[in-house]
Amino acid sequence: MVRTAVVGFLALLLAQCRAVDDALLTALSSPETDETQCKELVQNAPKLKGKHLRATMQRSWWDCSLTVVELGTAQGVHDLEAEYNLASRTLKKQLGSLKTAIEGAKTTQVVNPAFEWAQSPNEVFLNVKFAHKLDAPATLDVKVQNVTITEKGVYLYAEKNSKHFELDLSLLLPIVPESSSWQLGSVGRCSFTLVKKMRKKWDRLLSSAKRPQNMHLWWTMQDQYDDELEAMEEEEEKAWMESQKQSKAHFQELQDRKDGKVPKAAAKPKEEEEKGDGKEEEAGSDGDAGEAEIDEEEQKIRKKHEKELKKKLRDINSRRKRLVKDLDSELNAKTKEIDEEMQKKKDEVEEAIKKKKDFVDEEILKDRKAAKEASAKATEEALQALKEPAKKSFSLFGREL
Image 1 (cartoon, helix red, strand yellow):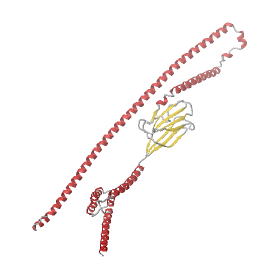
Image 2 (cartoon, one colour):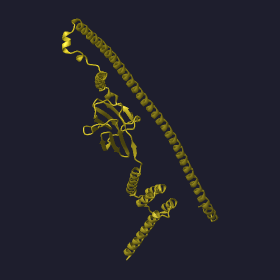
Image 3 (cartoon, helix red, strand yellow):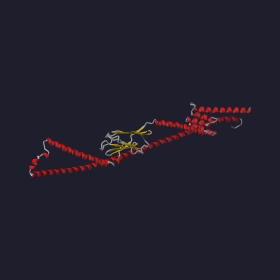
Image 4 (cartoon, one colour):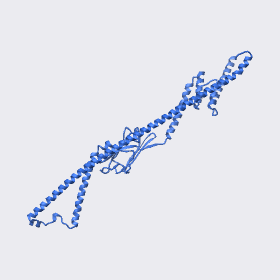
């Protein structure tokens, strides 16, 4: 009989404890409860559990969570760490999903990559770097999505995460797309070999005379083909001069026929030549020899001046290349200097803002500490004032509190 009563009492007590526990958890999860009320509920709770910590963490009540840990540790609650790990994993998962959504909503950055170009008599070479400048670090592991080579253009589209690269070139002269090729490098680069439709030196790469900022001359590659290009130009110039000479002779022949002049070969019939005076034949022979000698001297003078002109033109081209190369180097150096200066200023601004943030955080911590101390002092004074009347009433009966 007594044992049954004890068991019933314990069951009733357990039910009451569970009811209190469920009531606390319900109150902590209620939307009407704020963090201040949470701390009061936790401080007045007869027994805390790990799930109370999880409930406060889920609502981002960190001060209240700290109170649960402090009081729960004092009460000997053993599942605080397990509930903390469970809640923290849930929060990390939610934060990861949020970060993924934010990164997915970022505006795609489209970059026109920097590139170099060079040419041989039969080909054009492109060296593309997946960066906005040649001296900037290249983006590695880029995925090429589209390469299109047409008779008058080259198109490249590649991407890495939110960074996209697009190169769209309209060429000066036609190429042979079927014979042209491209290759992706291993250090953030992509190279093209474009076969020219006509064997000719291009004055420039693009159809537009305006040079884009991301285009540069590929000096190391161009130096390998300069001799071939000069030889080709000399051949073209020689062929042109020969064509001009033939055209001039043909025009003179047509002019002579128009004026009624008979060519030298038909000037005298064969019979008259045989009857002619030997002296006259000798004089004619001397005249032809003199004309031939003059023509030969004229050719020598022309060749000499042509050779000197070609040498001067080569010197001018070489000097121009050196000047352009020096200007490119100077431009790159200035650009790098400006970038470094801008980065330095950016770092200084970030450092100044960080110091201000640290100062603000310190001030906030000081204010919070002062507020807590003032609150504790006020609480102590209120409790002391509450005890004073009790002390007086007890002293009336000769007892001290």
